[in-house]
Amino acid sequence: AQTVTQSQPEMSVQEAETVTLSCTYDTSENNYYLFWYKQPPSRQMILVIRQEAYKQQNATENRFSVNFQKAAKSFSLKISDSQLGDTAMYFCAFKLSRPDNAGNMLTFGGGTRLMVKP
Amino acid sequence: DAGVIQSPRHEVTEMGQEVTLRCKPISGHNSLFWYRQTMMRGLELLIYFNNNVPIDDSGMPEDRFSAKMPNASFSTLKIQPSEPRDSAVYFCASSSLEGGTQYFGPGTRLLVL
Image (tube, rainbow over all chains, first blue to last red; front, side, top):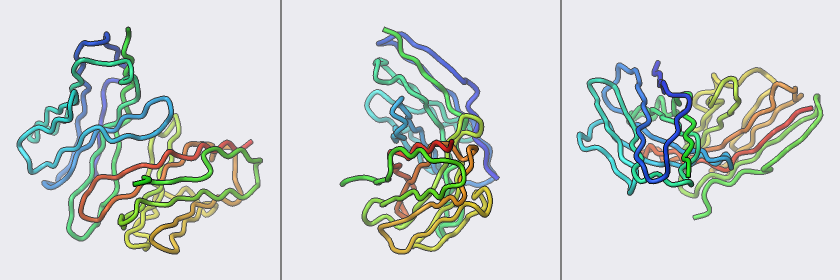
């Protein structure tokens, strides 16, 4: 079974600064996906960024980037130039990649509550 | 693309009543997932379907919960009878079999009194 751990229950950052959210996971599989989802107060789950495990290059989406360390099973999210709208819960998630569609579900971490302060 | 659609957005009911949550996945997606989110347990997978067939329902709490997917564009999650501990936000998500990324609906906030 896979597990995902987010060790920072809460974090805060000043507007325009950079913050990094941590995530570690445990798996014996080699092919998988990793995701960061954002959940603002509206409760909507919004995909922030995705990483395929076979890719060595770290994924980036505008102000969001990841530091993917496969050997260390670490997948941190960096938010640059933080904005007030980034205030939300952030969930790290893991999903196996299998051709027979087995294990197709997401395993989530416990979440990190991020507060961006003006 | 309309995204994943869920209804109702909010539901308040009394203990013992039947509750039906509905989901319309993104067109062309053939995997559908039901999750439940509570403060105590976080996000939990309840059940998922591939090509309208239930694949894993090990997360369904008990016999009071049932889910169906009669066709590729519609799924229901039913709770009968409902209990206060069922109060939570219920999310539906969909993905293609190949793509991996799951897209979530806005959720249904259920309160059982």
